[in-house]
Amino acid sequence: MTLPTSTQNQSLIIGLKQRREKLAKLINYPVILWSGSPARRNFSANKLPFRASSHFLYFAGIPLTNAVIRLQGGKLELFLDNPPPEATLWHGTTPTREEIGAIIGANQVYPLAELSGKTAGAATIAVQDLATYQQQSQLLNRPISLSHQTTSIDLELAQALVKLRSHHDDLALAELRQAAAVSVAAHKAGMQATKNATTEAEIRGAMEGVIIAHNMTCAYNSIVTVQGEVLHNESYHHQLHPGDLLLADVGAETPNGWAADITRTWAVSGKFSPSQKAIYEIILQAHDDCIAKVKPGVEYQDLHLLAAEIIAAGLADLGILEGNPQDLVAMDAHALFFPHGVGHLLGLDVHDMEDLGDVAGYTAGRSRSDRFGLGYLRLNRPLESGMLVTIEPGFYQVPAILNDPNFRAKYQNVINWERLAEFKDVRGIRIEDDVLVTDSGAEVLTASLPTKIEELVVMSNE
Image (cartoon, rainbow, N blue to C red):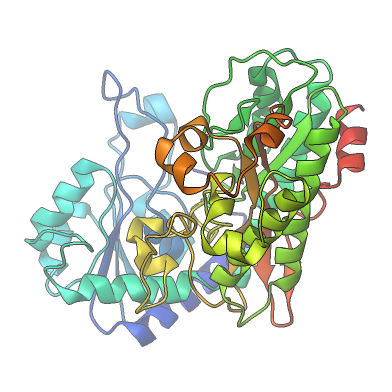
């Protein structure tokens, strides 16, 4: 656990107090949030990496294990056991619960055992690890699930958290900017390492090394691959060859849990082929045009459809698709190559608040479409100032999609398979940036990382 300096601590206490007070205006009953507990590998002291619950982090500010906070009326009570005396042998001197309480501005601190007498009428959000979830259910004497609601207060709490966490305050933005800056540096290191690398793993090592050197962790499992058509490829053993494109989706997370999410695609040789350049420019136009439209009041789904239409029009210009771009999007032909949504919320999680399901991503009254081209859209809300979203259009030749007999039959009149074969060296391209919605438009937190081909070529050849 990295403790804040005295100056940082004052800002932390003030910011956390403001968050508690905002929650108190939305919820008039107790809220209890668990941090979670670390999982063990083969014996108790050999722990897997631990990540505290994001809802806990939002109000507690620092990552604690086996901790609980109770919020009511703008006040915070911390429930945490002090480490046993023998723990100093292995971990050195650690802060007491009273010291931790002072760091986060707790009004009262208690040992965990005293929580059982303070759970009546409380709402909560389920924590992902099973041991903590069982503890939650036992102490509250009820199941906890948003999908099978037994009490409305948990759903009301989820909706309140979405309202608060969707609009980033100054405390959050300071962390998000740090995560973005380190992620940019990691991508630059990956591009520069490509010239002498022989495998994906070497580039991954260069990128993650920058993140670790800044005392941060990866916000998600890195994607560093020449198999860009595998959307969440987490293998790094492939050899690099001169004709390959390398897709790197890598983001840093600050010690207190705030994330960045960046994707760039560049040529391993430092030079894009004509076919690779043609597709890349289409995706870059979709990326740039969507970001240019970001401002309060804009429907995020409209940004997705804009990206889809630009991609459809570009592929039609290349002779891969045949037809009017609007008609192609209406029949979801673009989704043969751009099957996912144009992005998602970003904050304490890289897919922020998606543990709440579509309560976070979809405005009340809206539900996911069953359309091929809209079913994976993660965010369907009007944008508001203070939101942080990703914009990440892409092009992928996914065998499971392109070889599907049902898709082949449905789209046989709008796709030129012979022309598509001329683009076989384009397996996957994605360009992704983190975009803050401001009062007047947008600020790209990751703008210092190049997207234009000529700049990528220079950087990967340095």
